[in-house]
Image (tube, rainbow, N blue to C red; front, side):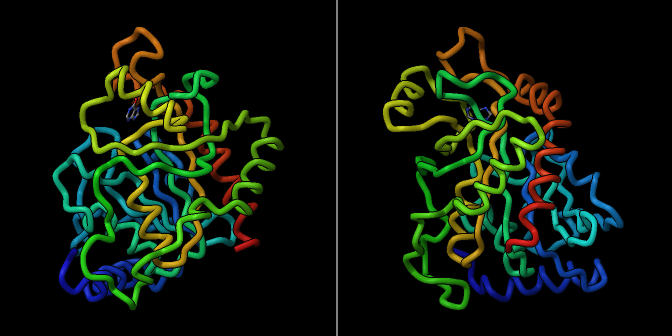
Length: 279
Ligand code: HPA
């Protein structure tokens, strides 16, 4: 755990407010691998490079731009992270979760987390979008390990509704109205960076997983800690190891995310419009 986490968060929040003219976002969005295009649709936007923000980790992964974009969807102020960091890049758990904490500390009322994931559920196809109903943390760490910051949240946060059911109902309605097939399922997080073996995927299926990835869970844990409700959307960029005979590659992940980005961007935008008045 970082020393002086609250002071570090506040320094970051002050820097953002100074650069964005006191902007007060209502909604936060974290955009996963290849899904960053959504941020470009925000109006009257100010973009801040992560390198300009104290303690903000910067990603080395292709497909992660590394910019905070603050702008509007109609009248609703939104802050979007174009790219995130992962544990496998060598960051400490608190650093992986730090940006999500910054969004919560900025005062967002709802956080939408997105990712690219491998499909484990045999009913899923490449290019499907999945509402995350719950997660299984097999990444081997928890960003809350260490002394608890009571100013941020409780020692033992409840995770029984980590993915807000009311917001998910809104997401379901919006998907139906937009004509987008939306799968539902449990996201399993592993540390990576190697993809899973077929035996590991069979195990994850037995454990109740529908999709697998290397992100998202630390962000959802700190948002729960700070009392911020969450919606999660996975883009099934590939079938998980052993489900298809194909080799897994980051290129396939990026290509699928790129192919689906129009549908994804429309769904996410319509969801934010619909959820904003409810939070
Ligand atoms: N496994 C883990 N992470 C991933 C995958 C996968 O198959 N696809 C995209 N991210």
